[in-house]
Image (cartoon, one colour):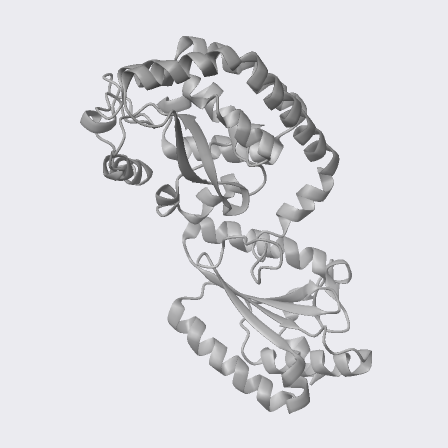
Length: 381
């Protein structure tokens, strides 16, 4: 048995083996296994080749000796099925074992699951099988972090909780600033709330506020607020087609251009917009109700813009990273850098850049730049 395990885990041996590997079970330690999951996810995002993560949960085996024997048996069952490119390690040290099966298509995944089940039955007793929980998660299909308790919660994003723990104080302070800033914004712009209410009511039929489902951090939906800038009973088909084409980079100057051949992220000369709507969109006054979204904790003052559900239908797996590390915001790095004049991928890269490196000082700089961008109306439609 030991010879087989050694043969199938030769990739672990080397000058750093004692640092990265568990010498007893011949697999990677938890911290390094997390790093390898992140690396494999990034490779998959770039190459488009899916991969599979299998976990074997031994926590229901209370007796440590029995757990040890069960892990050894499971490792033996896996040793004949794993390739040199596959990676074994502790998902949770001493409790949950993980295996990364690289470059797995759907058919291979289904076949592999059957073989693993057969090999586990051959190497473990019925009592052991009954208490070991085996699960499979495939990226990118299962690559959406769920809420707490979700079976795939951060399976492919173990770096996100680690960053949150390191940024705990910064995140708390950011929330305090959001609360103070949103209250100040509501009070400061209260005269505009009244004027816009009257202006919208007098010039078109329908509600003053426009409510729309958007996607927030960890892909949690929420109701996004804006002052209504369009006529009521409009179809989303025009915007949906435009956004889908934009993401696929099939832009045309006729539908999405601004007259100088540059593609933009919003539809220009949209016939659905009211006369008042054109003004409040150009000045971004339609965004003022989002201070209430910030106050409720659904958004932040600074962060990526929250996408629409039908927008996310066309996202590549790497696009989703813009929603993981920070809450969506009223303004952000994209708005003060390129706004609607950047390509979709450039916007996503700016959002990821902000989410990866955000700080309170960076937020302050973005907030100070925002009024100038709003006054000049650059990229606003």
